Length: 195
Image (cartoon, rainbow, N blue to C red):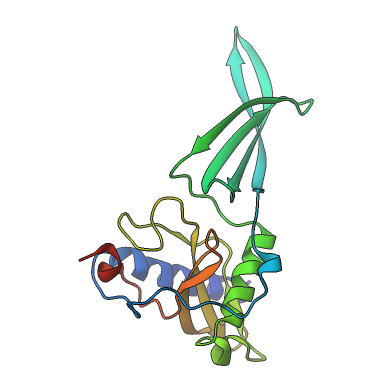
């Protein structure tokens, strides 16, 4: 149990430092993101379900059970919320233009693969005791060159000692399937927003 608390604390502190300092800093490279050596075959396509939960609404004094599903449509670069009845019939589908949702296991593994295949990160990301934390630390900043509307940018924390010691922090955009900031420094990227 203590190990889980350490990991959660490490991830939370890195994420908080990124949130607190948004608006200052510089981009690591003025050029386009560096490609990863990972094959395109694993790239996300189509609609990917993140989660599905039970819910209910009250109509005419009656409780009506529903299933609500959240996902990301990679073909349209938008979050989606779908509502189904208990028989599985789709009742409503709506786009969540600025929708933020955690990654599913397949998306998280793609983030890890992109980090491991990125040339500048390979030496630290492929060690025998390295863990890449990438489950759901989403990031979007208005005006950012890579992580604005329509992006699916994710923090990836590279940690050695079986995940205890952070040694790298990258930003990956699953929508474009690229490591957009290999050495993210915890601040918004002013130069990417034209400042």
